[in-house]
Image 1 (cartoon, rainbow over the protein chains, first blue to last red):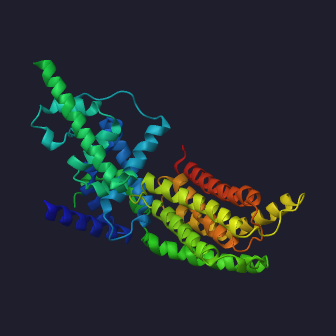
Image 2 (cartoon, rainbow over the protein chains, first blue to last red; image 1 turned 180 degrees about the vertical axis):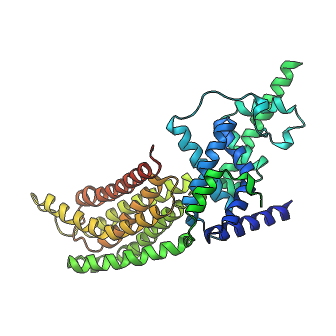
Image 3 (tube, chains in turn orange, cyan; image 1 turned 120 degrees about the horizontal axis):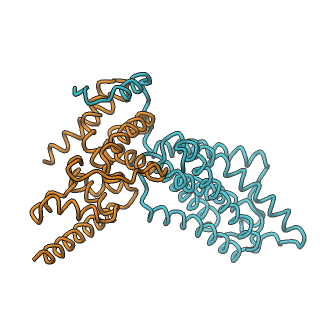
Length: 187
Length: 225
């Protein structure tokens, strides 16, 4: 797993270097590698698959405009996710947010931490997760689903890595408590 | 390569504007660049205004004269470095570190002012001339800070600060602390009213300038800040 992560990161760095040199193939490689995880991440902000797709395009345009600000061989993902987060936040701030949401079965892959799946079915977990504050959802998503280290999360969110760890711990605890309450209520 | 994933309009936009770019140097290298430009600017301002060491310089202990100047310069450079780091996506400075660095810069300026006043009264504040002295010192502070402020903000906004007002605030504070580090051994007055109103006031003014510059840049770049 660790080796895979490292190999993947090295591949992203190589693609980013090629892209900075003007290679369209490398940009396409970067897009292909990052599209799905970025969609999932964007979805936690907008809860709308179509809007997430639109924001994904905005994100890649911002990445393109800012491509010189990436300094090799720094990890690519914190740089990309920080830009993605900013695009999503600017969108939310601009008031263009759509209120309507899609039904669960229309959503892209539901962001549920894998170790939580043993506690309840995916739909229940998804509902509970979506009830958590966005800050908590975001850290859970970045750490448990997208496999970021707390240091990387700190770089993306502009917080200390210890703070990211505490947020993740509290979010998981809150999720477990809600599940326990839910299961207690069902029984 | 999985090219069918890429929407056609995005592909066209990117391929129309795919000139090679040179990556930004690391933050420490950009900080060195800012320090070099700021140092040259400081030297020019000192020569242009014919500024000299305060008359009671010899009465001040070494730790308070050159020592505090060196310490304030280090804090100023660290603040500039943090601003330049904040300017790159994915390198955001934690909020706690921002608050600590800003407070250190402000508190140090005030403590150095108080310590200087305790060791030497300096030139007396003549009644009726306080405003003139204050305006002169503020002009010097501003002129000394300007090169550092300009180069720092230029380097910050050349990158992509996602929290530009914070990057601007750090840069403004760094430039102000650097200027105060030098002006503290040039300004002949120690009176706390003069120091706190004009020198500390200018420090806050430059912090505000950095913050506002960040806000304006954000509005220009992202439209709806």
